[in-house]
Length: 220
Length: 278
Image (cartoon, rainbow over all chains, first blue to last red; front, top):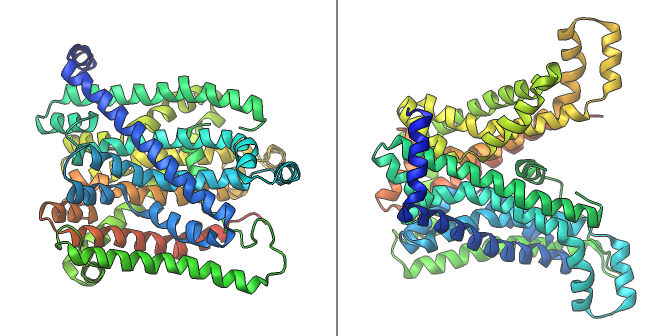
């Protein structure tokens, strides 16, 4: 157990070394890619029962509980077997874990959609696409942001595991190296970087955006 | 709202809406029911069929067929050697759920008793625990406690406690102040008002916390067991992966899904119904 001073020293060394800082950006890249992919897939799965109600049981009764209870490690280990140890494995594992979160949250948004507003839209135009862009999407803004925020938070946790087991870049990989060398200062330094990053993105990026949205839409 | 809070809320299963969003005219309900189930079961059948077709062309260590995996899955529940791993994982998850609910409850009660602790608990401890990476806990626990049951339960408790804290403090915030006040006018014994009023009012939130902790607990059990265990499903999975035994990796995943559903349907759902507000 190293003292705070040793960790602080290691932390400054960390930011001086480009080869170490590089890993921070790799992790961010993995996470962003996975959040975007899972958001697209998850929204598609949530929109399907919205426009075709009989698919409700298929998506919400079968697909999303299954994905929700399939463990992240399982995905990672399988991805290693399928894709090898590389970035694809990491992004695949994170996306697989995030998809159910995206489905559940987007569904909540679609369920909360204002029926009257929708009906009003129907009386104005018969073009589905127009209604979709002008009514459905804007009403979903708060939920889209909530989804992205949750995805981001969960992605951080999964990303480390995925990188640790199946990656050759990223902070998780670095954690693994530190663990193997019993380099406790580096280990704690990486953990501190992660905590600082997660907390500050939530605090300084997501909270202000959500507050803005809340003012516009009157919801939280 | 904290991310865990939103996640927590969204994770709580809600009954599926049986009525379609916009009622379709001129079509009997029964027909809809059939189509719904046809699609839903069709997805499962299609997935298994696709999996089987895929596995035909690939070697077993890349993509084992459904039958191989089913065999491995049955082994997990029958073979004494494998059953030991399954049971030890289950026991750990249950223990850590109980411990973290108690711990989260205590942390949630603290600011109520001593308002000065509000900032410490909600603005310092909660975000810290929430953003601490679970792998970080797992590695640290192995270094601190070695490979033992203690280290695994420690990791799981460390990860689950913030979820419980968030849910139970939500419950405490919604607590009916008038009822608590009424209780205080009847007795001055804090313990008595706590057990007679606070606990029953809080039970639905505690059950929500248990449900979420149980769900998350199974997910992270594997992470915890990956490094610091010589028993358990995570250990089994790790070993299978190094032996390129994809069938066991699959089977372990499905075993967890199965145990998770059984626990939720047989234990948590009845308990939650029992403590529901009438």
